[in-house]
Length: 468
Ligand SMILES: Cc1cc2nc3c(=O)[nH]c(=O)nc-3n(C[C@H](O)[C@H](O)[C@H](O)COP(=O)(O)OP(=O)(O)OC[C@H]3O[C@@H](n4cnc5c(N)ncnc54)[C@H](O)[C@@H]3O)c2cc1C
Image 1 (tube, protein in one colour):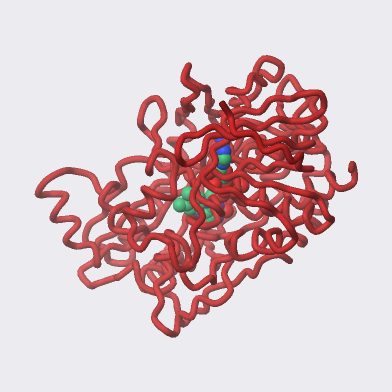
Image 2: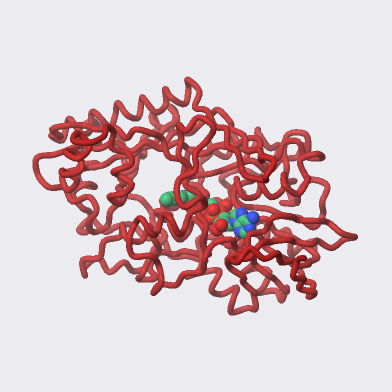
């Protein structure tokens, strides 16, 4: 029997990732009575896991990697208060006209333009601090990336990061912030909009996984499971879905919405990313200091559907990606401090699909077609050239793709036959269910998604407030 909470909230939010807290902050500021339910745990600066293995197993769904039907892409899906903003690399970029033109034609929504979106990007950026890594703090891995681009005459640019004060002069290593930033510098939602939403009256319940939503005479009943496996139930006049691409699709399908909205679960994209390692005679120590500083900014790459980033990961991540077993794997791992790393991120063209099993589990089908593989190969060739031109003794390509930017499954659009969310951010045909998170992306932009999730959430909260 579900434990019922009889208070009827104005809004219940599913998921405390990026989108949910951005919208809740705006609604709470206007006096709305809001409850946010999050399946993951609520950590603070003092309680984040202190090593990569604990971080991955405690802050992601399924204890770390989730695999699609053919196990060719490993998906990383955050499960923690703050969602992706706790574990991500905090790189923020506005979408360009290439991405927004494609969104306009896929969705039929005419204000997906650089000019119209500028207002919402401005508002999103006003909630966080964004900085570039000062040149004096770039590490050796970043220098190799930059030198390689210069040697090959490609364009690159500094990465913009959502951070406020990493105190790099004290010797801090930002790679640690992939398990949550202990300095409070990373502009995660618990450090920014979630904090102010809580100050303005938001109720937050962590370790509650929402399993079903039921519409009932204008109200919505939200059923969930708590950390001990007990059923809980809440009521609200409105619901905001912020569970991300897979989370929202799974919940809507398990709640029976797929019958009227056949596009739920379709149009899943993930920007498959591949890390490659150059092994040098000298120590590179890619994990130290500001572990990322540059990205590609080359019009040719954009046209060809890939981008390169100067990145690194913890030893457990690198060990998973380095190919071979036994002695050969061991020999590679012994040289870890000599590794430089560059990642190719592809703008995937072949949509995948999320369905649910009879037990309600998410089943992911995502295939990279010939074009997607071709995009990766072109990026990998440039990486080879960068490493060779900067003196790498050996080049090792990661053995599988990683999906970090999970997008789509509830595409926004004007046509209920080919989309799920309407231009006012409502579930088609349902006036009190909203979404503006990564699930509403109509296709893959090929650009880091989180700043646009924040901007769309700002646009959605303005629309929700207008219609109250
Ligand atoms: C390692 C990593 C690095 C990344 N780096 C970058 C980067 O540098 N720049 C960038 O732009 N993007 C990056 N991303 C992607 C970015 O973080 C995501 O696109 C973004 O977090 C998505 O935001 P969201 O609000 O849609 O969902 P999320 O942030 O994923 O939040 C969804 C939340 O909903 C919760 N939830 C889901 N279902 C339920 C349910 N049924 N009941 C209760 N709670 C539920 C989840 O537990 C989760 O906490 C990265 C992602 C990862 C994993």
